[in-house]
Length: 311
Image (cartoon, rainbow, N blue to C red; front, side, top):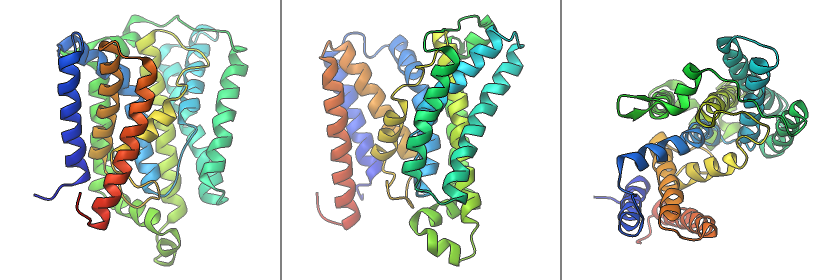
């Protein structure tokens, strides 16, 4: 059997689980599994969206900041403006889509480098969130029905797992079973070639960024519901974790290649690493070191597999 990137990552994940089961306290318990899912669902949604963006040859550094802005919009409209919760939720999701469309216009229509664009909107969205709250306001007046989204469960399953699972299925269908997924791969592999072939490059790239904005809004809802509060620093650093999960899962940072399944494996690997090091009472700094080692190792192995060299 040929060793694929996904198979190698799955074996590494199994080894990781075995190590932490041996050295960690209460690691292999249903309660810890539920907490692991709850803590990683927001990053998981961002990682699914970024899989689509990166396969299309782009990058989005602004999703974490956009999550924070969506959270603040949700809290302000609910607590200060007195909007009904359904309208506040819709406004938060719309904020995410609008943020994604801003990136889309600048990248797809004006053809500005996605790295530069999203680095700028990274600061813009976070600055707006801090400006709206003056950097200190925290919103906590959320009804129990909404908090169920982040703290409740469907039978034995955390609610976040249902949301993440449904989102993963939708992204898998888009990427692997629909014509738009093939177009995104073609665009990521060679944008100019895709244009010469008559493919709607700008439109497809715009769809990818709009979906990233929608996922940032949905992740904001899960984040606020899980913690019961919304503030300007929500989602800080999430974009880097999401990108790491995507690349660790085998998606090429240069575009044209990637899979939803690989991203989910990358997410699980990072989530288990963070959770396991904490339960094993290992230094918090070790998590960053091990994350970097995993990422660099995955890139090296993927390069060898792609070149057909023996491991």
